Image 1 (cartoon, rainbow, N blue to C red):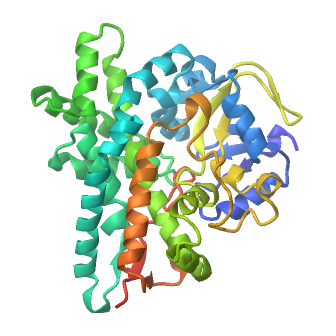
Image 2: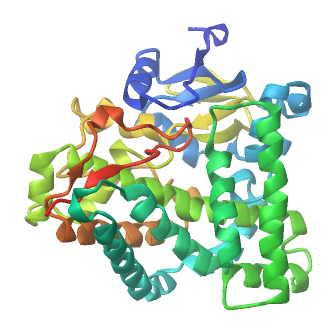
Length: 410
């Protein structure tokens, strides 16, 4: 297979299992085309992705290491990618800059601080379940995404960041459109870019005039008092990353776990009986149905050879978490099947090494609070529509469901 035979990735991410298998059949690292016609390389298995993530000669900084970065403006259909790789935060920096920005945010997500949030997560979960129970009275269907999976992490990250009530809907809408890869038009990209400035700019201004005990206030203080530790642009884009990664991924983690268990009665019974732990459910969900299926972009600092495939210096690489989790060479011939009893603790869905997600403990806390509480409260819960009618979010990046309609049962 040559680079002229690039496989176009489905911008809707509608069938990740089939797409991952198709790519894997072509080789361990294959040339693909992202929405809008952007060329990249896709590792199709666990070992290749792990090697690339850990390789210090693989960068996240497009400005320094993407050969096609100077051509971005010449391709209007690539403009959506500028919102991903043209920002300046932990997701798009390399080396010392990445370490500096990570060090500024990491203290907000230490184990101690995360554990301190446990009572609040539990209280908010109970409040949301009460509301769902009232809404689902008399057998009416309710949407678990909008009733639990979305508001729990959104409200938690909003409290951590000090997002005022009046901005939360705008922030959630911004992240949804940021993740939407079904429309690579310049108009959509420009709308997202503008709202990064207006919505998060409003958050910065709110906390500048009303400082509090929150991450935004602390980052503003670092910008104002820390010399060259944090620029205005880095502040804005770091908040974009923390908002997006701090709630969107957990929305899909909770939602994907719910759907997996509701469509696997035997596994649901084993989990609810205590034969399989909720930690295992979370890990298996992250392996088989990762909240982020693929993440743009990384770049070859020099020519690389991975699994016998040569990636030229300056070429882009997509981080393929879904393909890695479904790799039969690593997880066995039944890798495509959800199996809560599987030992999947080594999944790559949260990254690895210096690129491991600093918000992973909070995501796990929220999922490990919400899921057992939900299934304990509603033991007869079932999907209100056939599983095949669930609609995937319009993204090849995010992996989740637009709605999860259920009947809570008696």
